[in-house]
Length: 99
Image 1: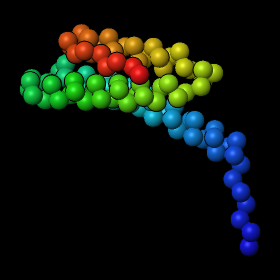
Image 2: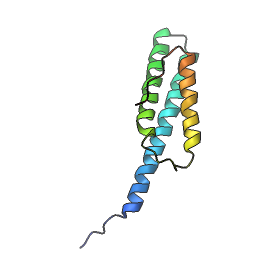
Image 3: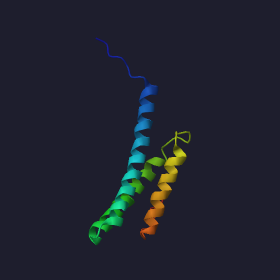
Image 4: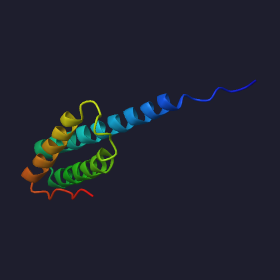
């Protein structure tokens, strides 16, 4: 029984889609962590949540540059990234430097 080879175009497309979804998820996580930091009364929990938001932004930044310029909704994703960075600045956190 011979096994069919995967369609390379489909596999690459699936990988790009997974990368896109991962970036969006990281940005959403970062924003959620900041929501937690804004509503908690526990200072330690707030600082940890801000730290997690920074990690989420760094992770998104690392993979955002891998997305193709013609990626669907790329401008909206970059705008969401800027919202996360702005909210971090409002918390007094220094924005991670992009590579």
